[in-house]
Image 1: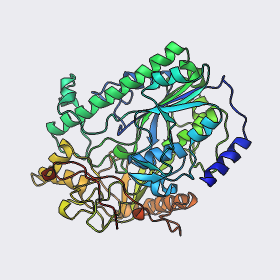
Image 2: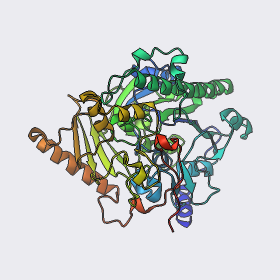
Image 3: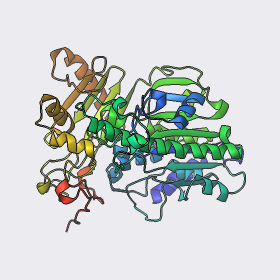
Image 4: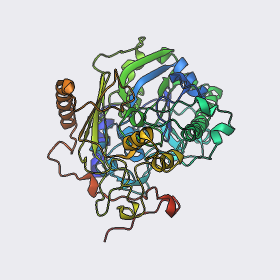
Length: 490
């Protein structure tokens, strides 16, 4: 706590208090909404008129990536503007958020802004100080928040939602009028109407989140504050399906992102610069005229906002880091570890380093032996797609391939040639013609990780597997599929 207070004092000493004429910030974030599931990206089924409007009246980002494809670390990285591997225990799911880490909300609130949130903010987990509200005070909804703030006071609001997190109402997508036969399947899945229907149910909740944000925009218009508000709309990682959420591939770590801010952002642009959700905190501070703390590793997006260009605006924004620590402890007991990995994504290649390749990347199938009792492929949420792929793994070669891609063990090094394999299903790391590019990418990744103080590649004593885990895990269907909290270590 003392370190956090000192950091805040240093920040405030270098900037003046904001005035009531400052811009507002509305940050809208879905739970488990991944790229490219929006109309603006060309998805033929899901309807996202609010997101599409923001993209049309602002800027659409093609290469937005999270820090970690897991709720708690992803959201912690957004709040702190730092890579999740710098956040100690908060680099894991269901963790404790240390008091010493300041957030952009701390800084903006202390400068005079009204702050608050509704829906899902940071979590799941617990702040070290139980009363600390990391994204501001909780409100029933955005409309209640704007009514209770002081008149004319600028605001920074986190508009969260539990959509489109599982579970889903079975058949809700079809009931909503979606043509399930038109749902595109990721390349890692077998041809299956059951999976298409499951994705349509996910789409239904994406549309519900889009409507929630649409209501907030309507409120801003009624207030006369729409054009004075920086609006960002995104998700915290990919959809809750096999090989997506809790995996580093694009369908796990790439997210939709659109931003609108009146005449501050030239409309109708599509930007291909690689950006990270860790960039949001620095961007918000920069937008309201506050200093960005040195410990924030994210970069302000203001230059991209202020540009009139589409495509690649900044040539050196041509790659991005992603990573994962522990999602659910889903190895065999007594191993309470996760599946630590780091990735470097460029225009042409995706390199992934798996630090513990002997572990199950999405959890053990041996639920009777799981570290959290009963946990079944614990890094993948239960649902029809998961059950279908597991149950049909021996049906034919197509289904066996899908099972291995989603649940099988992986080598230490994965390399994907995106020009030939944009969906990242054919690992070419062992092919001789990729030897030099593999070597170059590994060297680049390791150097960048070291420069950020990543404990996985430094002499740090931080052990992510040793931090307490406060949640449960997806259970085997024979156990009812329910989550059960693990017993505390004695």
